[in-house]
Length: 341
Ligand SMILES: NC(=O)c1ccc[n+]([C@@H]2O[C@H](COP(=O)([O-])OP(=O)(O)OC[C@H]3O[C@@H](n4cnc5c(N)ncnc54)[C@H](OP(=O)(O)O)[C@@H]3O)[C@@H](O)[C@H]2O)c1
Image (cartoon, rainbow, N blue to C red; front, side, top):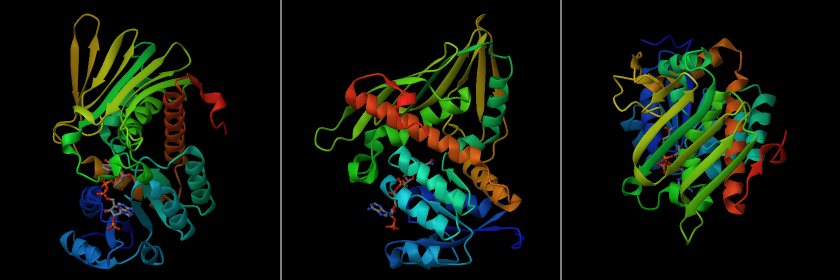
């Protein structure tokens, strides 16, 4: 039985597929309760509420934001709507967990952060793996001397388009689709998280559908200080891959499935040295979406907002836009010239 004086009351904007996973996480989390679902279609909201055990349903996003019994909203809308609904939610005094990509461009993302700060509400993007205990253990290894001096970060996140439904938002430019925002967001975010710094310059190259200018694959390179280089590829045209490697002068750390463990019950990573030795680390195995919801609710209950999450989201957005611009103009882009603060 949850202690209702300690729970964060959640509302969800839109009956998105990903909202099903998050509804399970909110039900599982000790410090959260799922109070309301909003849909553009009131019958859809009613049906969804029944199926996913939500107390209330409403037929518009506005009605949910007007509900004084909601503390936090989860926004799994198409990317083109993230900016508008985050700002409206923050002005209504709601904390915001907004899906990735956070916005369509860095100026919009900064405005989202500004309004959230002004209204003293948390802003975080919906990347789950950062909040899993495995990420903490990996970060400890990275920050220790285990790998020596860091030199490379390499990552990939791909899915095969046979798995993407027709008319999906990922394939529509006006909804903010494209593989860079959908999948590259994770690779760029992981790179910034590991190196804890912005790149100095970036280069990207992509392939797009001819009729709608949506990239279906993307490869990028990012140059960092101290001789560090990162590269990634993402796309809808290759089988599922979701790995990263950070390599240093002594050893490399490989996580085969950083965005979500292949087997939720066995999260793991490896450190490989240059003698052929490989050490496998297994970590605790809570569901990562529940870890994210727990963490978000802990922040709200503590009353101390964590700016680092919106900063990571905005930095990811800035690099993403710079590398997209690079691909479109076929030139290396200096980040200092690209939407400086
Ligand atoms: N963090 C993760 O692991 C993860 C995983 C998957 C997706 N995502 C992100 O979550 C978001 C949603 O992805 P999804 O695949 O779950 O989306 P989806 O199933 O297509 O759902 C999007 C929802 O947005 C609402 N919506 C409002 N205006 C819309 C419009 N013009 N066109 C389409 N839908 C509209 C709809 O809800 P109503 O009709 O009920 O209002 C719809 O159900 C995206 O930003 C995506 O990148 C994150």
